Image (tube, rainbow, N blue to C red; front, side, top):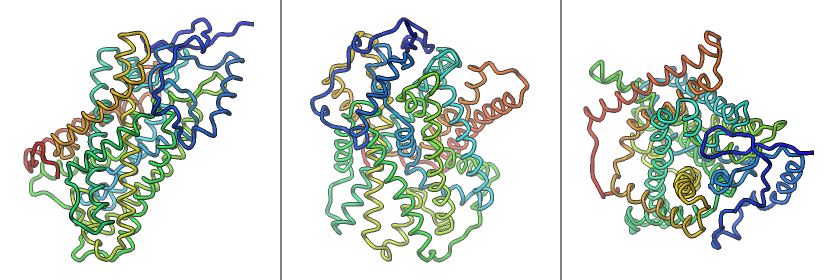
Length: 501
């Protein structure tokens, strides 16, 4: 009895039903001899069980097949993902050092409005995350394993590219550049704490150490193969965020701490400060540009669609994320009030006010966790860039990348990210501006894409909700960009090329 199987066609965002394709006939991506024997801690013990599960599903004729090009790309060449992998990837990408500056938003918004805005933003982005998970698979059997593909399917090929290409590429490549800056400088701090010496490598040399380490780790072939790496990233992210706010709250507060909101002299200055505070909160919630890619690593059948285990993994991970972000914001503001440093947030405050009365082991452990989390986060944020670069090669040559080219591509990206981090060390100062441009990826586009793809009946409750949130997200993005530009013009930024500090 013949059965039909769903095959993804890379040339179109819509997947069509084709004749059965034997997996053995698809040429596989050549594996690097440097990583042939490397398995993550989770991938190895589960490999046999997953392969047997795949065999059963294939016999039933319900396993989602990959067309050759999809099977050659780092994101979709392995479909062995599960809810645990999704939770690890989401945790590793969802908690970052940008959460350490959350208390800064409270210095402008105050206690009540700070908590309200943080809660609303958390609920809003969790809702849009659910929308993306549902949109991953359409009723016709299509799977959108990349944010850009979904945007093109919803808004059209040209408009979809214009709206989503720059924000998603920035959230991937720009985050990797920032991680080099943070990871390299924190490596330097860790060395000084452990060795009790100021005689260390320069910041530039520490950037090199971090980039080399991240590039070596980036040789793992695909998104599923870094599940163990993401697990380490999730553990270290939860550990350093919890450690930092706990130590800050336990210690005595610095003198002259104030909890009165900081107001600018002019009315427009106050408005821009509020917008900047909202931008800090919005920028703390990241990872929407990766959720479709993570879900794309899962097998999917008509009876067991990938959205079910994906949502289970996301619910668990965002429960943990909430237990990290809210204490960081509230506890950090309670500990330091308006004395929170603008650069580094609560971590800088801990080192500035409690360096002498905190055990070096705790300070060193916090720095080590930040370094490890930066290394692991680099992998998951770089994977869409690797995928896009390999897509260009496979499209032009109609064959998988050889292993040596895959190694060169990842080395090239590491060198490029390092060059940008050294050439533009003031880039984090523009985070508010670029974050405002990228904000619709999280808060606006998913709502509008839901309306466009599902062709919802107008004037229903869900239609009004998605349309309102989508428009509000676009307006908020424009206001945040305006506020960021105003702050740059009025306060200025220290521009220095090729001088990392």
